[in-house]
Image 1 (cartoon, rainbow, N blue to C red):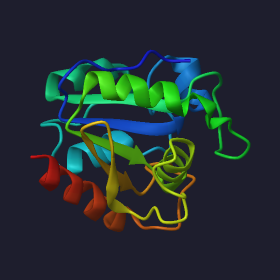
Image 2 (cartoon, rainbow, N blue to C red):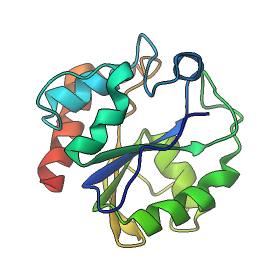
Image 3 (cartoon, rainbow, N blue to C red):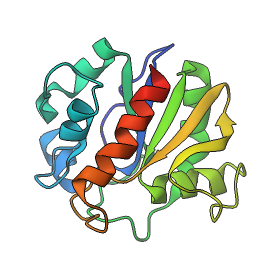
Length: 168
């Protein structure tokens, strides 16, 4: 759908479930109107200015990468996704060796843990995980998706800020 934004030795790679339909249509990550990814990235202190989806490739300049677990289709929700690509994504992450892998949402973190046989999936909670992907530490964030309204923005930002403190 969208090319991975990866290179060796990044500080953190954000890994979502699947590119949204809006992102696929526009050709940029986290382009859906309700998605707060770029706002959370800025408010948590990962970037010095608020980036737009059209500037997604510039995250590499800040030591940040972006990828997704599902590579074969865009999706407007997380139901019915085939996470079979998780192993290939993990191999790529291992070869790139970021310091941290941050899953954008519990669905992504639980699916990766289960598919990679690193966790049952049920034990995955928000925050740092007891397992790694290669040498990369793993953190699960609350989803930046506007569809995830079970948590207020301020609560989401606390988790994103904790990750930034851990990374830097």
